Amino acid sequence: MTTTGPATDGLIDPAHWEARFAELVKKHGIPGAQLGILKVGADGAADELFTTATGVLHAGTGQVATPDSVFQIGSVSKVWTATVIMQLVDEGRFTLQTPVAEIVPDLALRDPDVTKTVTVWNLLTHTSGIDGDVFTDTGRGDDALEKYVAELGEAAQNHPLGATWSYCNSGYSLLGRIIEVVTGQTWDEAMKERLFAPLGLTHTTTLPEEAMVFGHSVGHLKGGDEPVVAPVWGMPRSVGPAGLITSRVEDVLAFARMHLTGGTAQDGTRVLSEAGVAEMADFQTECPEKILLGDSWGLGWFRCDWNGHRAIGHDGNTIGQAAFLRLLPEAGIAVAVNTNIGSAIPLYQDLYEEIFKTLVDVDLPARFELPAEPVEVDATPYLGAYSRESVLEEVFEEDGKLWMRTTVSGAVAEASGGTEPETNELIPVGPALFAFQPDKSEAYYPVRFYSLPNGQEYIHFGARATPKRPA
Image (cartoon, rainbow, N blue to C red; front, side):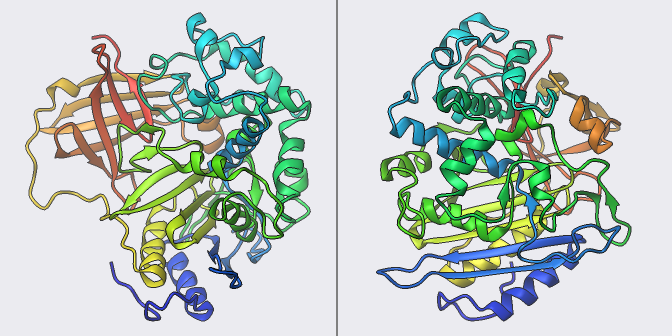
């Protein structure tokens, strides 16, 4: 990592970061992006807030991105949904250990035992085992989540309840339905009343017709000199609680600030209890693969060990848009980036390494790279097919190398044009750990193999646990 710019004095240098951000966005071929940096004032001092934008919202129209433009923040929305769930816990409406079926009586999952016993905590921590990538489009009506949950019984149970961790969008749509049942409002209405309004957010929405009144970003499947605009703008309303908030970085940082200050908005309004804020950031469960996102999970947040400094955050990806949010509570700092490209991890790495080193002298973990010397691993135990609802992973040997062929199906694959299989070499990094580099990507991604105590084998890739098919 190379750090440029001002000395580490804890102050935000707007001119430097505006120029550096524009330089890095261009370097990585991203059509348009926003950056926001917040340092909460200590001992009554004023906050430092910096926002900037660069590039365009749409490569076809050339509309310029500004700090007030709105981008899809994708799965960063999950932390917002989790916050409202924790408000309801504060109010005594239910507890984290309440079975979901007690709140949503018509819940009927594929496994009857899971239907009876899955808890609110399981959904918040991605430990339910419900197939996580069910993007059923149940229409644009206010009953979209109710219809979605009614069809959730068709989703597979990918692992036993609580047995491991696997990223679960479906569970967050179900959390959204819990909010609806308990409050009597749609998820969209509850978010506005319980979060957007008390936080004073003016450029944050959940519905596309609301986002359209602002300059709004459009996704891109490819950037660089020949950008490709995504064929559709957004995901179905049924996945709103998992990833449909649209916002500007300033509003995202107002949400982050509330979590950095023990649950209060900037005007002093209490949004969430101090205990609720702490519980969301505290350790809840381990992640089998600790490299891609975090080493463990809280309630909504993932948790990162930055060389002895505990950060929390979340990433978001929709169809051609990617967002990043990180908070370092000990330093009272939060950084948000919104982009309109499908993957922006190299930008995140370059930028966040520099920002946190410069402002608070904290080094992020070393990047996931190939080992200096080749590692010999017997890959025989890992060969075979692994599958879940919308993904098939085939691991095979050919020409003396190990390969993984990924075939994606369903609504998201069709919308993003990603229905053709993609094959990548798996390069050994360590025992049961491999690296691969997707086509045209600058970053390597981890792939881990592991087994549950019951003997069921899994591949953990892209934050998902996918079970191995019987031979």
